[in-house]
Image (cartoon, rainbow, N blue to C red):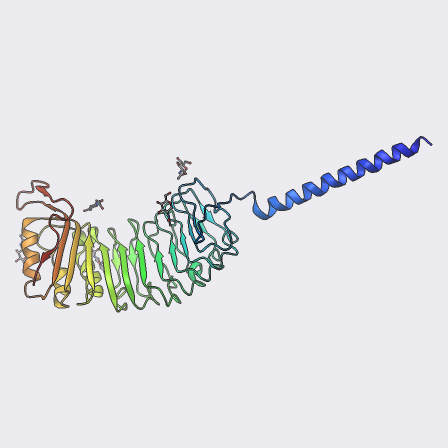
Amino acid sequence: MDSTPELCSMRHLTTCSLTLLLASLIRGQMLNGDEGRPSCSRCDLHLSCNCSYSGFTSVPKVTDQALSLDLSFNNITMVTQDDLMGLSRLRALDLHGNRLAVIHPSAFDPLWSLEELDLSDNQLTTLNHNWFSKLEVLQQLNLLDNPYSRLGSPSLFYGLVRLRRLMFGGSDLKELRTGDLLGVTELDELTVHANNLARYDSGTLGDIWPLGHVTLSLHGPFLTNVTLAAAVLADISYPETQISLEDLHLVGNQSVGPFRESAKRRIRHLSFRNFSVSDQSIVDLLVVIDGVPISVISMEDVTLTGGRKPVGPITKASTNSFSEMLWC
Ligand SMILES: *[C@@H]1O[C@H](CO)[C@@H](O)[C@H](O)[C@H]1NC(C)=O
Ligand SMILES: *[C@@H]1O[C@H](CO)[C@@H](O)[C@H](O)[C@H]1NC(C)=O
Ligand SMILES: *[C@@H]1O[C@H](CO)[C@@H](O)[C@H](O)[C@H]1NC(C)=O
Ligand SMILES: *[C@@H]1O[C@H](CO)[C@@H](O)[C@H](O)[C@H]1NC(C)=O
Ligand SMILES: *[C@@H]1O[C@H](CO)[C@@H](O)[C@H](O)[C@H]1NC(C)=O
């Protein structure tokens, strides 16, 4: 007789603990599924999600409908296999300015629609061709300013048949080897940061045509290995190609040599930015391009370093003050 209420409360207890157990199971599942992943819902009506400058240390969850995702200037260190799952509509992904050191080989596989990918200014020491192997409609890829010393083989870009804008290199880039750009056919824009390049296989950049606008930083090669600088310049010099050279310091007898090849190929557009040049070298440069039907030479941010007695920067021309010298 006494046992009935006891039984009742026991049953009640059991139900209670079952409920609790169930609740914790569900919670556990959510934790397992999403690892307590942060999410970002800063998406506008056009499904453009701007999650930049938010202190994220991992890739946040966003709606599967997202068309563009800006994750720049966070503290993201890796992209896992599952982080971008479901984002099959995404057209642009910006991871610029994080601390990315690890990307799973198939992390970007779900991104069938991706047209623009920015991985610049991160901590990637090696690049993996598997990252890009499913990105068949990719048009723009920015790999600038990561600490890799080479692009590596097989070619990162093989299969990217729609690629039209490519940026790579950084202060750690040491070598560019035959085949590194295999698969890159025509480009509207090519930017290569190669201020410390020590080895270049002639022809590496030579198969890209048409080639719209090329920006090269070749500070080191112009000072220490003009043969290398000349080989790079020769490979991208076409009359139709606009050539911008950055961070050059031309001094001494040899330093304008690399322009001879470009001159022979009758380049028409040449511009210099962050350019430091001695009086003699600028004269030498004019001699080299004498007779070439150049239509535009522009210079921005030029420092003249004087002549035989190096007296340091004499004139620091401000941006544009020296630009658009027209040669008709
Ligand atoms: C996202 O917001 C930042 C400022 O918080 C802005 O600089 C950036 O241009 C925005 N990104 C896009 C894709 O609109
Ligand atoms: C990234 O983390 C560092 C140190 O952990 C912090 O100083 C910095 O402000 C963070 N940056 C962003 C954009 O959150
Ligand atoms: C200059 O670069 C070329 C081409 O990469 C290389 O073969 C040569 O060894 C380099 N010379 C020096 C002195 O580093
Ligand atoms: C300009 O070029 C010099 C090398 O000549 C480099 O050290 C410096 O960082 C460059 N400045 C900018 C603003 O890129
Ligand atoms: C400059 O180069 C020319 C030929 O290459 C050579 O005759 C001349 O002596 C060199 N001048 C100096 C100052 O090195």
